[in-house]
Length: 395
Image 1: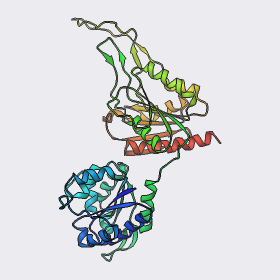
Image 2: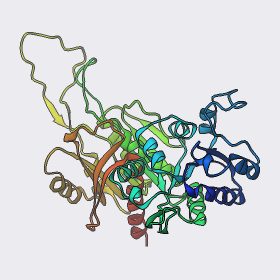
Image 3: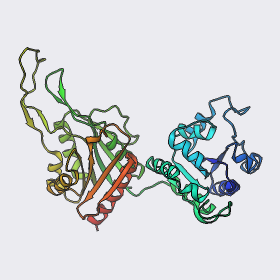
């Protein structure tokens, strides 16, 4: 495994040497990136001698520009760790600034990120730093929070870099494969449905499919066999998922009911049309000067059908509301025999966004609220709750 270790400028920079050695002992190849400020505390030559490979200190380092180095490194690493991480680098990461190699690498890599901050206690508790930390946590990054103790500035309090062993173990934990859903079959629906009016026009909604695709990705990462029934979206299906593409609510109903008996967890994140044209026209409807009345009829409520059919399956629904959010969501949870329901207020224009504020309601009343979290993180928490319910159903 290959890990990029970013070292930023504070007195704790010397501890990054031990972090690097700990990762090497675990079998990792470690590429060290030392910022200009960090080089004032620890010589890059020290890291280079111990790591056995060149240390990156500059975007335009001689001998390293045969390829776009930050891009090639970003695509080859399994994890980016920053230890110690200063308030400055937290601000850069949170706000998308890229003025050196480390911050540019951060914006370029899809790998998981582990951050171990170290700074003065007042800096750690400053509202600007706290806001940046929350932004980064919302993106799904992993933090090894600083410890309390005597700081280099002479003050006492939180801010000291966490123990080297703690940092190394957290990095290795993130890299270990999560097989918590191994052996389970997870069905996820995603995206909108399309109901034809005529060969040219249709009824649909604003669902992007991002939430459902995030759930499918999170389930795959945890070892589940994933079946993704998707309405039309512009998203690429997660590698490894069984993709069933549908267009209408009827097609989604048929696909879901066929798969349902063999599933362990079902997450109905799709925004299925509630109504469809009563009788779609075979030819394009011509425009006239008169007002047109479109007769609609109800589509089948797939979630309600599953609630009636379920045995030991864990059934998860979604409720997108613009008013009386929790009251409506709780009613839907009970009425449709769901185990969990994710409720969000869509009056604030959340369609298509990468993050959301949601309330996850359960039949047992163990409800949680996630404020402006990434959809991947929401998916992870949702699957954790679904897994616990599955275990209780099967014990």
